[in-house]
Structure formats: structure tokens, C-alpha cells
Image (cartoon, rainbow, N blue to C red; front, side):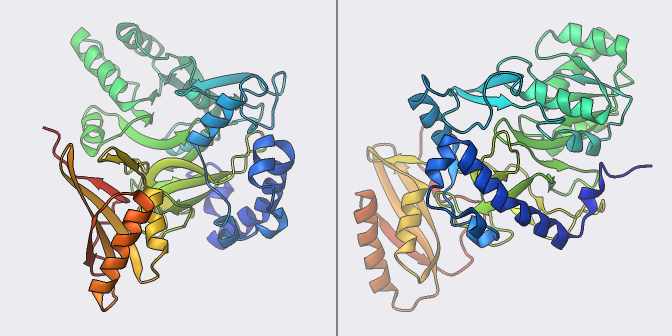
Length: 416
């Protein structure tokens, strides 16, 4: 039995890291030379100097808001805001739209979104039929999964979304090996099949994404003979990580360089600490450098028990954008980071907003081992007023006492 999609999955970790970093300077140079956006963003960067993770971490983070703003500003000249290395025509068979709208190109490379690896890890094999219930219109999800399934050697039924009874009928008659789509829609299909008295014995596996896949729902499927596995992908960079039979976190894809940074900054956090997931894609068609997904996650220590040697993440743990309105003023994680940078004694900080709406109170909790706390707290209080234009209390706490959940701003107000 073949356990791995290819030899890349079992590379020595040091070899993988060396090969990724060897490819990095060329991708930086390509992004600068082939896209107007990165020609501007990276104009002062020497690509040959970006050959380590430390050098990569010094580059600016590009987020979805940047994509949207540039696309909106340049709509008449370039619908992709200068981020795509492709142009309309044979080199770009499709273009998609995500909410915003943000437009994404699709290139011609085989398995352009690199989804075959995740589909394989979910148990699918060449020669099988897959029932694909991701959307085929506007967004790329349906095409992402279909191109990956084709690369794996599978046939696809393009079920798309909706029409539950017809989905049940098609599954019963075509007998696919499994399902790809959101977990909630698969549950609806299974329940509808039970209501209609239609058996779906062929559907024994599923690759799921697009929303949270909880342990309770995983067990619900297992009780009905379906083994479900989740993947983590975005319309911008394709596959980022995927679940394996070990069910211990998500293994990173082989075609991306992933960092976990403190929300509101581009600064990498220590292994195990929750932060924003930032991805550098090695895709030449859409070469996003340090793309901030806006999603929280953390790196797991150790290797996957299946034998795959790439790093693992815990999966989706919430959103990194914690911008909050306090007393009529927006406060965002970057401002908290600016406060912390002024004080070498401070290790981490968490701004807690409490009280009731229109009667807000905010307290900045800071981890520090510093003596003389009264003087430090007073100086931090001044920095809060200087940066946020708001007054806030300061509470000094011992190192390691703040929750490891990626939150820089906690909104604990009562909304009742």
C-alpha cells in the first residue's frame, strides 16, 4: 500500500528547509520583476539577501486588505492590483472572485492549487469517483478540488452546492468513493438520504474544508461509516496544510513557506505560541510574499506519526484581526505591538476591554519580570495614551501567565 503522495513528504527536515530557502531568493526576484505590486513593496529589497527565515521576517506582510485596496484603486488598469504575474488569455484559463470582491487568477500548471496531496491524505486513490460539493461559481473552491482530483487520477462529479435530493440521487446511482465539500453540507446530504430511505454505502471517506470540522461532527460521520479529514487552503495561496490519518494537527504543504507571527506585526513567535499564519507561496503565477491569512494557528512540536516530516500546525484557531472600537476610537493589534516595542522589559501584552458599551474600560496586561513596577506601569500608561489616544489601566503580570490563544485584544464587554 502506498502511504505517501510523493517523496517530498518524507524528506529530511533539514533538506526540506534548505531546498525551500534555496528557492526563496529566486521567488523574491520573480515577484519584483513580474508584478507591479511587489516591484513597489519590495523595491528596497535585495532578493539574494533573503535566504534565511530571519531575512524573510524582515519583509513586510501583505494582507487581504492590501489586495482589496490595490485592486480597487487600479481596477481600470489591472483587476489584480498588480499582484498577478499572469494576464488574461491562454495562460489564465479562469479568474475567480472572493468576497470584497478580490479577484484571483488561475494558471495552467497541473494541480495549480496543489490540492492532490490533501486529497490523497484523505484516503482517495487514482481510479475513484469523487462527489465534489464545493461551489463552482465565482469562488475557486470547486475548481481547486477538481484540478487536484484530476492530478490524482480521479473522476469528479461536479455536484456543487444545493439541490440536496438530487445530490442524494446522484450519490446512490453513481456510487462515488467519497465526498469533498463543507462538513455541514455533507451532514445535510446524509440526513436527507436517511429521510428518503436511500442508502449511500459507497461514501466512506470525505475531505472537508471551508468551515470548522469539530470532533463531534467527525464522530457523527464515523458512526455512519464515513472517515472525514480536513484541509486548510485559501483562494490566494492554495493548499496550506492538511490532516492525515494520525489526526494530530495539520501537516504543512510542500509548496509554501509558513510563519506564525504576533497579530498586528510581522514578528515570528516562538514555537507553540498562537499567532497569525503568514504564507510565502512558491507559485510563479501568483507569487504572494509573506501573505497574512488573518487566521490564527500554532506550530506543533514533533513529527507526524504517519511518517510525513514537514512541520504541523494545530489548525484554524480563530481570526487575527481583533480591531475593536473603544470609546468611539478604533484600536488594533498593531497599536498594542507598538506599545510593547517601546519597552524591552515587556515580553507580551493583552489589551482587555471590559464594561458595557458606551462605558468602556480598558486594561493592558503586560508580562514582565521587571522590578520597580510602579514606574514601568506609569510609563506604559503614557504610551497607551500617546498611541491610542485613550486612557487605560496597566496591570503587570508574571511571564507566561497570559493565555496562549493569539489574542492581543480581548473584548470582554457585555452586549446585553
